[in-house]
Image (cartoon, rainbow over all chains, first blue to last red):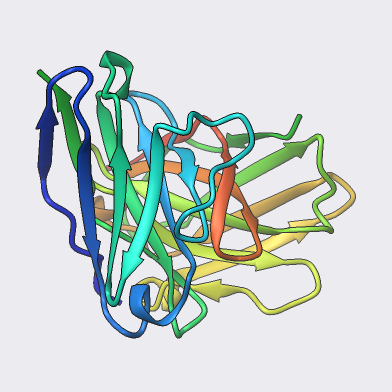
Length: 110
Length: 117
């Protein structure tokens, strides 16, 4: 299975909105509404931010939102804050009943 | 509160078998899918596979020939065995709880396994 495609880096100023894309195929992202997003700070374990394309775990900030169109999913962070600086990974369920991750995107707050 | 903790040798010799255990607290291991994910230093996440007590495991096709996962309900643990390891298997290994087999939360803190002679 091929990794999903994410931009290597995205940056924005505090208060701005940024969007991270995640492109797959009809066998994963496009075929199921099972895209999730994870945030990972250096030296820490990943943390679930979005699941099932656009659902937030209980207690998570509504500054994080997800969407999907065809084979591309997106994570939007609005009102960018310093603590949002981290690596972000998308993941999708696949037609083989496996999971596949994207290569990761480094978010920098300028 | 669900917590997961990985344990196992931090150093494995090439061609040998990597063995890790994940101890689960705050959740019955019989009720969910459980996954292993790894991350080489400075690189992205790679899904290794998942196991469910009452079903067949699912493995990453690229690792399937070398991977075995199992569950021990008496200890509320699940395990990973990766055979014939090489330096390319050096990574931080995470265990996690799969929800609906579609996303993972929470994750263990991760354990570094180095393959070297």
